[in-house]
Length: 134
Image (cartoon, rainbow, N blue to C red; front, side, top):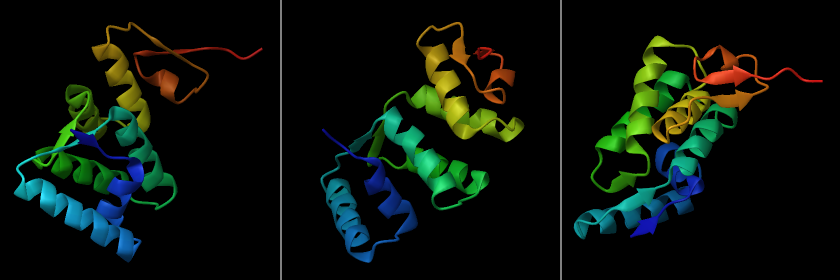
């Protein structure tokens, strides 16, 4: 199995570099023809969320929609799929950052009771524990 990096998925979703986007398209077409799949690590999903939001200013709803669609594509397999799906589901009813939701759900799936953070906004989530700075 072959994994993909964040920049591969950015080219796929945004198409901002025509030459690289064509390369991605050709690879995806080949993977589909071979009835194979590409692995998407959870860290790539986390970075993808950050890049699409901060660098490309893509809306939360569009990011969630894109990830939902990618999950349905048989050419992709996702590490920690349950955590990703739970995070996308949680994003509908909450205002937490998508990346914080993914961190919380991945930690919970790993059996963690809490995530320590200095981030006041994230600490409003029940799984995060706010640390006071000195």
